[in-house]
Length: 315
Image (cartoon, rainbow, N blue to C red; front, side):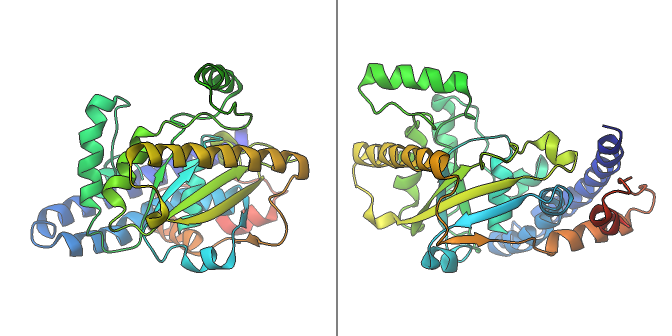
């Protein structure tokens, strides 16, 4: 705990200070550039915001050294990051969103400046917010992934029991590894985005049996783990046209996802043929070094002398 505190405090201060700088730059861009060219503003803002986001990716990749094994076919791998996509994923833990950031290679005002869609978990209020957010993405200048966790909440055994009771009473397939998806937001997203988003990426996250479940606290403590991610690409044009058909498609995907996770429990893998170790991109390490050097008043994190990798990274 002493080592974790010694790391969290200076890194937290570094993130706060760099966040203030990034937000100030974003505010200037929002006032000076966006009124004249939203396209130019978004292109510049993406680079600026990335400096802040990559600090969290550094925690994942370099500090905690969490290994992501990606299972996808060669065509999907070639297209990842090169096209707009709608991402649906099971919600296993509190760091699923960070896994998405690592694969895709922000918090507070930085999210607002970057056109994030903020919801209140009330459909009466969120429907118009979602429609407006989807419309704003039509002319986004760079490939993006819009992530939807259609289960609506993180997976727990208590929530699974509730989902199983609901599925049994509604005559739906009873899940064992996922929750029953809530399809309103997905249907709305498909209807508004199918004209400019060519694909849906169906992601399934699983933790190997012998590996500890990664959490944000474990990451801050520098505890390593392994995450398996299976991704299957679907063409948006192949989805049904009706709202009920789109909703059923989403439900069917989660029935298949449940079976895939059941298979993973037995084999402890999604298969060996398409497994890819994505490695540790050096961009986040470079950004952390730049920010830490610029904040001379921030003391360097204290690391255990028994961990030469972390010691070398932070010297």
